[in-house]
Amino acid sequence: GAVVSQHPSWVICKSGTSVKIECRSLDFQATTMFWYRQFPKQSLMLMATSNEGSKATYEQGVEKDKFLINHASLTLSTLTVTSAHPEDSSFYICSARIDWGDLGDEQYFGPGTRLTVT
Amino acid sequence: AQTVTQSQPEMSVQEAETVTLSCTYDTSESDYYLFWYKQPPSRQMILVIRQEAYKQQNATENRFSVNFQKAAKSFSLKISDSQLGDAAMYFCAYRSWNAGNNRKLIWGLGTSLAVNP
Image (cartoon, rainbow over all chains, first blue to last red):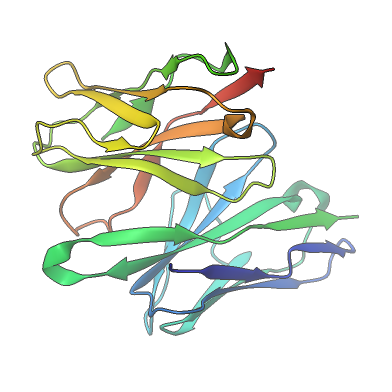
């Protein structure tokens, strides 16, 4: 089956530093990747949608200069949290969409990255 | 805009019993997808079941089945013969048929399911 990995799975960083999270589709090419944020016991909040080779589309209220998304290839997207602050501490999840054309498409989710900013 | 509502924040069921999780949605579209996702304590999101709106037949996956009522905009999930491993957060999600919005998912707030031995 389709597998999506995220690295790191857990990261602690100091306030003011930047941290990069990678999302990889291991055995398929992803037309689109999505980045979510999830607070404890809450639903997923879509942050942005990224398509390979083009700028990410950010959801309303998400600071694009703070959450930098790069989708350099069909198998890799990165989320960089710049100048992180404690309020950025959260669980970040990516998903990758595979397109089968007339047969439809599907999203597969990464295992998530827990970010703690001290 | 589309919305998804899960009115049961928490549910519990006895092992081997059946439980039904509710989901309603609002849309003006006629073609769309509906999903149930499971998020266990590991937090890995897992697709449980998927329903295409144009299909009248309710989707089933082993012990999981849905009751899709298009006119009522209702999409409930039934878990039969509940197992301890079914304990998780369950999210209902909606997705448009067309590609205009990159096919992003609209999520409900989730239902936390506990399975009692």
